[in-house]
Image (cartoon, rainbow, N blue to C red; front, side):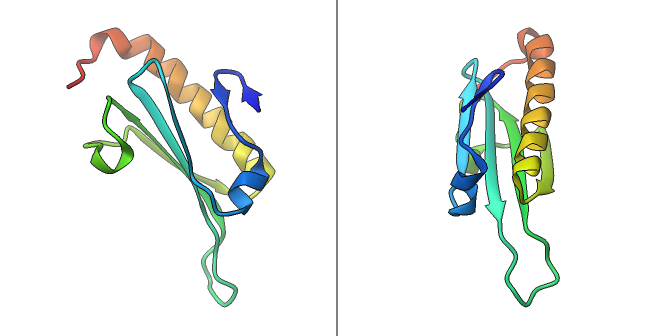
Length: 101
């Protein structure tokens, strides 16, 4: 489903335990990971999002430029999309000053 700049799945995709990652302008990358708490745990379920620049995959990225945790819900996914949009707008402003390996 298209949300501004981002073509992201619905919350149901994350309820099934799937991870979503993508990129824009070649060097803006993001990843959303569902973390579901175990039943007898004090942890809370959440959606974790990371943003990094460059052409490397998440596991090889040297620096994450932003990380967010939101509620494990459709509203939490909407909050992730808002964070992504804000981070991408910032990237568009600074991208010409960055150098990528």
